Amino acid sequence: MNTNPDSNSITHTGGCHCKRVRWKVEAPSSLIAWNCNCSTCSMRGNTHFIVPSNHFQLLSGESNITTYTFGTHTAKHTFCNVCGITSFYTPRSNPDGVAVTLGCLDPGTLTHVEIRSFDGVSWEDSYSQTGISSCSKIQS
Image (tube, rainbow, N blue to C red):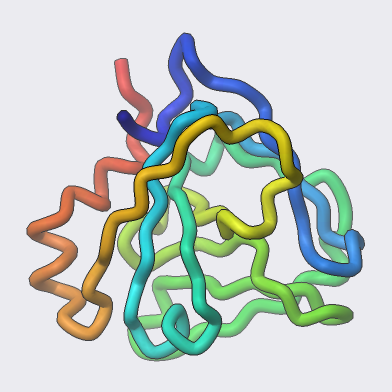
């Protein structure tokens, strides 16, 4: 089970709370999502799944997106400048991908979600042990 589009991929849609930021993403209906305990994810209660960046398309709200970075500045934490919701972002673990916030998906397209833990407090160890970096790679 992965989040890379294959013959089981479908189109999911979603966005922020005020609906100014809207997007679509190609991913299976059964996917793996990650709970992270890093300083920003733990404060936001973020659970996300990761896809290759070319499987994500912003549909509206580009002018409403603000980006926050810190630390290595690799992660691009995007959020709506009206409602403040981070519905997607570029994760440090997968700078070639997009992390989609599970709770921001429109209802009706998921059949199963497996939640895995990513220890963002011990980032380097968790990165090397979880295989999270493969989530943004296109599977052949």
